View (cartoon, rainbow, N blue to C red):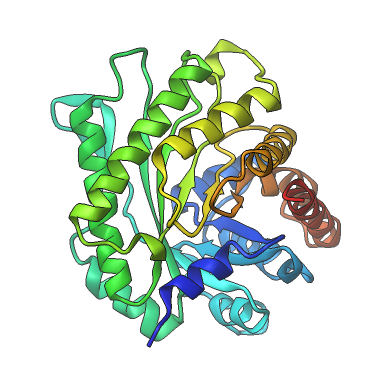
Length: 331
């Protein structure tokens, strides 16, 4: 019998975190064009292989979230990326939502889709490819006191819970990500309030849908002033408000919480993660905390790589450097 609690504990093992390599095809191509001036299926494979085949990542990573395209691919030795990760002691995970669409009646908000056919997809991921966990992302936009609306927030949290139940029934641990966007002109205190509200609703929906909270991981944004304000929050302020929101909303039986970088610079992400870790220790937070970064790990490496084989070793060193920084931020 699969022990979901054990998988969840392993995902937040001390000193390790999760690499989010689950960009959609469109997002991956956009990132490649931005950093390497090329895109397409071959370039996306090279992009995935650059990071996933880096020697030594198992020292820092408990899991990697893959996109379906990558799950079905193999590395340069014709070994599937999922098996390569597993053989190195890193759990493969899979993004299972299918993106977003506008909320009826509130077109400035987004609702996540992907529940139709989810159970069949989960069975294939688990049985054929050995995935151990999943991720479903909901997008929460702040616009003053107008957004998010209660209706959109509740529906998104309900879909997170419905997906989580399907995932647990398939023998995997769901990572549930209600991402409160960094974009906007809101104050940090508003971000804190929305994070707390979203997570409070999510926990209620998990209970109502019969989801075992001891077999889920929460992925959250940090409480930040909106990017458009130009305000650079002090890490200590970010830590106080982020942890305050989590302590208000997340029960102690949740086995772990992971943070997304959400458009922050790599330096901001690491500094804020370190401050949150320090604050959590001071306040005796009941759950392990760790990272689940994407761009914060990738950007410097992609700028070095530029799509050239000769630059792969240096790019991988840059990736490892960021992983080391993230691990140090947890201590």
